[in-house]
Image (cartoon, rainbow, N blue to C red; front, side, top):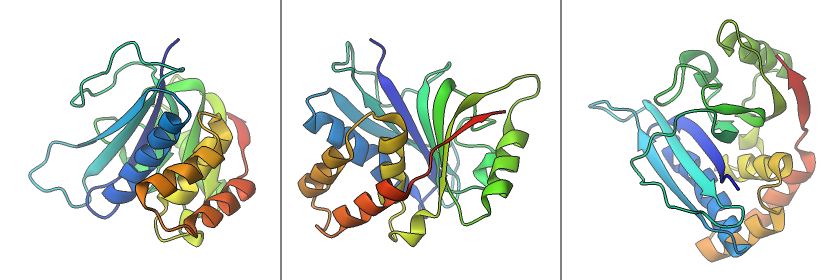
Length: 203
């Protein structure tokens, strides 16, 4: 079976840690469930890295990966099961190596957006970001991840786990333990998981 791909987009330096953590948490959780999984990250080609688009990828086997893609790989085609956007401005400005957040996102996939903007505003931006002449149908989760924890990766990982079922949220909590994340963060994870609202949308 085809592997599951998750991409997490953020801004270089200021969000690269959280973007990487989304991929790290989910890949580690999958490994603890006996699946083959790994993660890697890429910056846009630029002399400066502050605020430039940054992407981290998690690849999860179902349950095994037939081959391990090279870490320098820039995925192409309709490949992503979930796309995480840490900076909502990237909805309209484009992401790492991509003109639109919908580039590479599968039909029926999931978009998770970290934002304090009103839900209707985010939905409008998403509709405007769809390339002309195309449409998309899938799931969205829009949440104020910073309301849960300073590291927005915690709430965003919970949202991905709930919307995609790629891993059990309990496995993410176990991944926290293995990665040395403070124990109390597991309570934050569960709260974000319980409160994440999944919306089916057609655009």
